[in-house]
Image 1: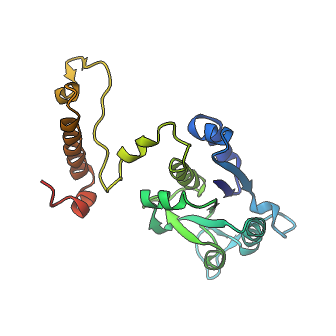
Image 2 (image 1 turned 60 degrees about the vertical axis):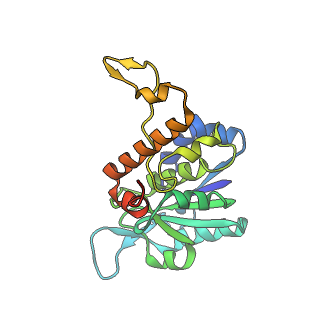
Image 3 (image 1 turned 120 degrees about the horizontal axis):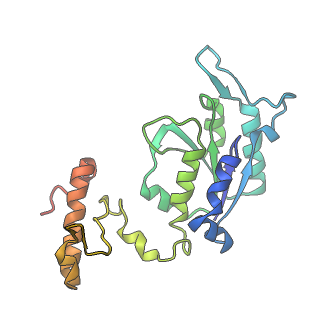
Length: 231
């Protein structure tokens, strides 16, 4: 899987790939990354990439030419490039999207800045738009990293133990059950005793019940969606 980041601030993203799982994924050639800065493609002699909104409004917008030429250059070199714009004006990114996008061979994440992008960029040169939540960020770089991380974990060989994917939150619209480690008794607060007895069938049932309780408490929307009929 190859990831391209279109951003005015590549240094904000580069450091994230210098440690931990994604660093190993790059070293093992499971993923690769590169960066495209729209300032390198602008025809403006002052290297400007923004302009005031037509019709008035607070703030500036990223102008069409630099971003469009950046995306055209990427698509000219990669027929498989799938362009994703990170914006709050989009459907929420979910775990199923991470799995779906993990089947692509080349993802291009466009990080907006200022008050956003000229809409003509979105309509003509972006394959899909996604949002990481109902809130506003200073720029799209953090959202791009969120998607890259979530997608990468679903690429074969990136995680040391792929079985962990099947028990994580949002699989089957349920949050992950509580987990514990040693010591068994920490300052009088003990691990659930049933987990210590070695009866795997009962442990599975217990964790399922705890997962449903957690989902009902923290995410009643998910619980109502898929588990209201479970006993």
